[in-house]
Amino acid sequence: MPRARSGISSPIPSVKFNEALREILNRAIDHFGPQNWWPADSPFEVMVGAILTQNTNWLNTKRAIENLKQAGILNPHLILKRRRILPRLIRPAGYYQLKSQRLINFVRYLIQQYRGSITRMRQRPLFMLRKELLALPGIGPETADSILLYALNKRIFVIDAYTRRILSRHNLISGDEDYDQLRIRCEENLPKRISIYKELHAQLVMIGKTFCRRNDPHCSDCPIADLRGLS
Ligand code: SF4
Image (cartoon, rainbow, N blue to C red; front, side, top):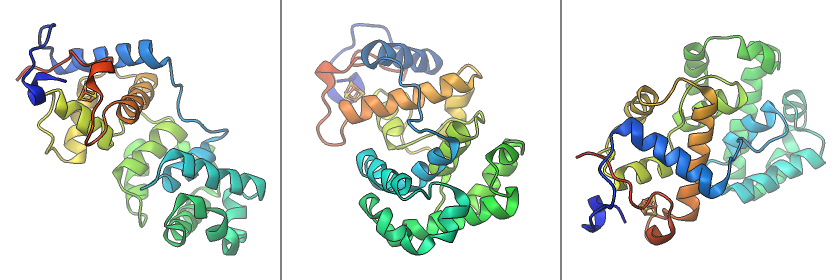
């Protein structure tokens, strides 16, 4: 357990924020192997997954996506056309009425603004796309940034609850920063490479899911147990 929480001293010196991010990435890759996220067959599937995974685990999201695939409607035009069957198909992801509406709103936007073309959407600058996505009902910064980074290959770092928990437990952030403060802090301390943004977020999720649970962290087995930030 990091000193910030447990009072146990660290066997390695405290590190700066940029060094800590690099250490987390390297050690997690050594431990879990490269994740090469996002697990999907197409950018549109990433977008759908980012919306469906809100407030549920990935297994449930995968089941819902599988249903869409089996029904042959994992496509913006077909989702809109067959919207009546959407709640039934995405039911495994939970909040299925709400998520159906979010998905419908999203595909309407994609069709109206970009004629349903991800390639066309990708040509738009990052800050404009982010503004558009955040204006859609039910799309918050984490969902918007997941779509931007993993579906559209835009250089923006994704912050989630695992990122915040891990960094604060290691004395690297205070934990009360707002989403964009934390995102910018990470971006300022990372090499400006999309591949690194993608992999670090994926590895933080792996650490969070495997070890850094909210109530019962398994620090003794965690690859970054001895890492702590400068106070
Ligand atoms: S589980 Fe890992 S990431 Fe979480 S506090 Fe413990 S050592 Fe840190």
